[in-house]
Image (cartoon, rainbow, N blue to C red):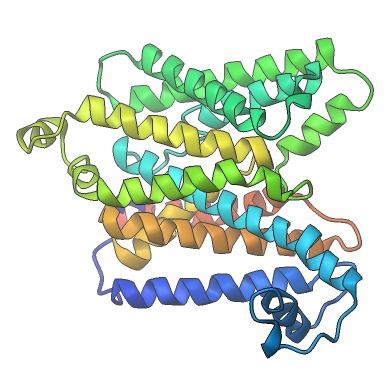
Length: 349
């Protein structure tokens, strides 16, 4: 990952970085809850959030309708953006480390396209009536199937370039399969609904849809930090990692299955949201370096901040309508990534 970031630099202590990102996340979440078709003052937002916890500390100056707007509409949306943004950034950071490729992310490995294909099949064929519990499971199956196909195509070469090219090929096949599903089986407005969902957004956020992605995210963060030392060994060549007691192929497969799980559950609840898993880990590396024990939690926090801000920007720019968050992340992430590539090319001259 340091290929795109540049030379080492002095960085603030990890605790300061985490506290700063936590403050930024709380601030942008409050902004996101306040803005909308009905403006809610910041004081009211804090009061509505605090009233169930400590009712003796707040004076109720808002109507039940405004409380319902916060708890039933905007807060689930913000919570989904936090979970999905953190999951995508974390999956991108893991993918970039274990493949030793700064361009790797769930989309580049075909994982997100596999999840999107299976979820789209559920939506078009009417299996989606199974509900939000089934969607993450089916998305994970699609993501894992795409990953296994990528690994099968890449074979035992051990080449990161072959792995990424296999991911691109599998992603294209999944995209073609999705197009066939829409052309052959979509009825009425189903194609429009699927395409809008693929653009990525938080418009359908519900509390009951967050349980599985949130649990997966917590387990991934804890597991990633706990395995941080072994993940760091993958920065080196496989022979060096083996000499230090790690089976690189087996461990890389386990980590990529984790990437599939994170990306699959995120796609299931929010659709396709690009560039979060690609750009955010580079920004996190700039802040704290490439040590996985520092990089993974910072990537998760930074990804949450980025996606909440992108979703808020999409609602503000197109009010009273909204732009899908995936459109905003692509519009921001694409130029940022091009700038990083140009900066890296100048340094290599």
